[in-house]
Image (tube, rainbow, N blue to C red; front, side, top):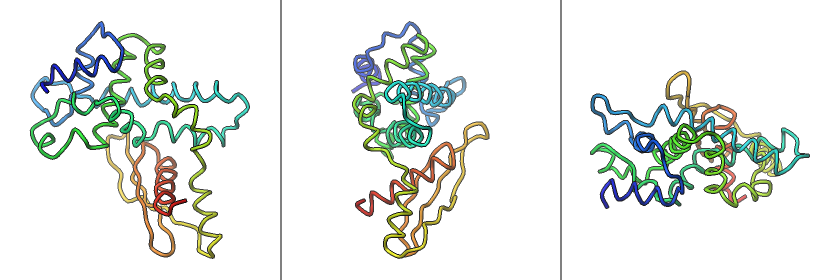
Length: 226
């Protein structure tokens, strides 16, 4: 499928008619494409992350007016984490519309979770800049669908759950180790490893260290079958 056809197919799935189509093109352009004067999606990703966060924070407050901050935080993290963004992107076939450099195309970039998550956030920003917050919020809630309604049951404080699991088996509390930090100062990405005393480990990456710890704990719980 050509880039033009893939982008047209994505537009149908997004359900948004861009007044400024160049915004969508920018959102779908990975930095690997390179070239002088070529705008990539990094700036839009930065903005889209914030638009997504606001849309989800509002939706969670409306869905459960009595929830405490402690209850809302893990639900929020579950909805905005990169794995969720990548999953939504895959569902709408966003990868097929990505504009990638040759190296990324050959290495399977259209299926890479990190690229899909970044592009999903960039697309949200493109809709926001094209038509405002209400349009972006509507897009987010439609694409995330049942995830929002079901997050209260799915999301837990993963760190507490992992600690309880370890203590119930006579193990020391898990350790959380920052193993990498990347990205610009205004939008860092933290990679954290959650480690049990018996050596079992899982890693996760997020834009905040606490969120990365929670995601790593959730990943380890999944590996444990909890």
